[in-house]
Length: 462
Image (cartoon, rainbow, N blue to C red; front, side, top):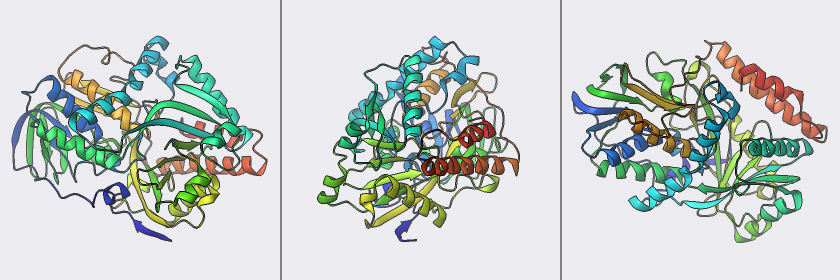
């Protein structure tokens, strides 16, 4: 494995001087108005908006590791304001007009994150840009056109989305075998560790107590049990996303899906001239297995993908360390899309988990009887969605009726994941079929979408 660093949580922490030290743990039994479990984006945004609305609230955030340890400090740095799931699946919970309005509100989160970072002085390399999803075959281009047409049916503004041909796409980033791209405007690139650490500092300045190295062992109405004492609270928020399975009674609520990122050394000006990518756009592809990338502040490429998608029994990584198999898969994606980078040194690789519900649709809610709320299941688009979750959870905690609290994802509860080994077999079977479908399309010239991808979606209900 020719990568200098593996794990160490993520490159984003190496970029800011290393993994941070710990805040003090819970000092013993406490009584507060609101207890939030998890100091990632969801928990911290919730605390932020609660304090903005009601400065006198007493809030405790309890975190097993440190603020931003999980996906919030390891993700690809996309602040997109996009759905990471099928809009049509919410038709059982709301009307098409309500879902269209929800999509409109979600798009405003990019500007909202920008507003807060400026107000709170959070330097997180925030940059407004575009997101280009490239097609490297006719089949991929057809799927992107289908996505565009579907978006138009859901009334996504044409100012937000456009299709460009191969020549135009290649003029922006010189992706190999470019047939065109789907372009999303008004998205942002961020350095996620800087954002989550800055948000934690902003929340702490407002008087929120963040207790780190504090493991939650049980949740019940009005009571959060930890290894350091009990927190008694009128309202409790479970904001644990990909780590939700570790809380008793929630073992099958969200599947911890692995995702991994490879970061190159800084590229030379000469190589950047060969590649293009002058606008620091976010980058993806139209393959079934999917990838995501950004050009970082200092001129590196951060390329992400699923790698080994799921560990048996919902096991998670040790501080971001990933397998050699995942490294090879990420290298293959990088070289397939940008063969100009062969020979570039690879500085850092890591992985983390994101929370996936059984129906692949995010939820947020509050049980009025127990006073326990939750949010998660962002399926890889959590940077912006977590901001909207935080706004919504603040409304629900304060028992306010707003335009957010009546949206179709509120209080929606998907069924649980299957027990092992069916869970492992299903997820690995799905990704085996996706990879096989991608290989078949490349082998056949990519004229038509492989039926294997359709079978993969049916297998897990994606």
